[in-house]
Length: 466
Image (cartoon, rainbow, N blue to C red):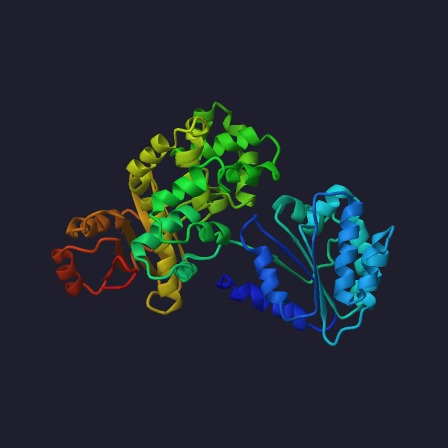
């Protein structure tokens, strides 16, 4: 049995809803494979509950299946073959069943029921308004189609709008919990695995084991029969129209075109046509828009950058999607060799920056460092991997992240000293701290310099401060 890792905040949120007086109505949504169903099963395992997974079959077939599960829940197995011509009857049976504590009704993949019957949200509204909200009941509606879940349950135009007592949009598991999935492995190996799977539990499970990473990539991603071969397109197919336009934009960003003008030139689409696609991709947690961390008015900054937010999708659209023709012809070895040549410099080194951000937030939580916001900084000529700010203490932290095969030397620090001079933030009255991350350690000169400077922090290949 797999261990249940992290999700303390989500479990506590559900527990608060369950412990509240009266009925509760919670919406849980997020991209597929992020762990929604696992979270639900973990939460309901010791509570009276009816879990129903909707299917893409007809409404009648879904109602039959619900009826069977309802009969098992109530203990009246003779009712498994009962025929109900409407949903109100089956929900009435659930509401009237007596339990010693609050009972839970889970409808997973809720959008499938709406596909079968577009009026189903109105049915659920009536059921909630007339029956469920008056019982000692917790209703959970769950779904993987983000836009549809928002439209069906959260948006103003939905019949269910205003009924929920809580909602959870589930995101990936933070890197700080990643090591809990793996036993007895190196820090470097963790980062390289994380650069592929990100914090998606299903992907992590597929990449567990003692095989060499590139063998796992070949089996789990490059093989045409693998679970993840079609995954990137599937994630988009049920969320958007014009899937070709979205794929072109993602591929362009993955190849290094991060400005609006460069994306436009690369895919031969007018800049004015791109924002609606980019907005949708941001809402789906596929890409993110970045502005320099010191920007005081980020929403209106025109020179923003876009990057793929999801590690698996970044890897796929950088290395796999452009090579689909070769993979379809069975030329897996050719594609894998190209990945090996560019994996560290063109992928892991960038993901390492995100790992370092996570490490800094951990040190911030532990009180070792003090800041309120963190991000990248750049102008037309210079770029700094990480800058963290604290307005109250006027502290600014400059950090560089190096995923290299050799230890880094003193020149990296002096280069950071040079670049920090052009960062426009409380320049006359600020406390400066410098942090260097290196996966393969530091030169003796740099370690000696650190002993002489209280404003320099070195964080090595195990995520520990030297």
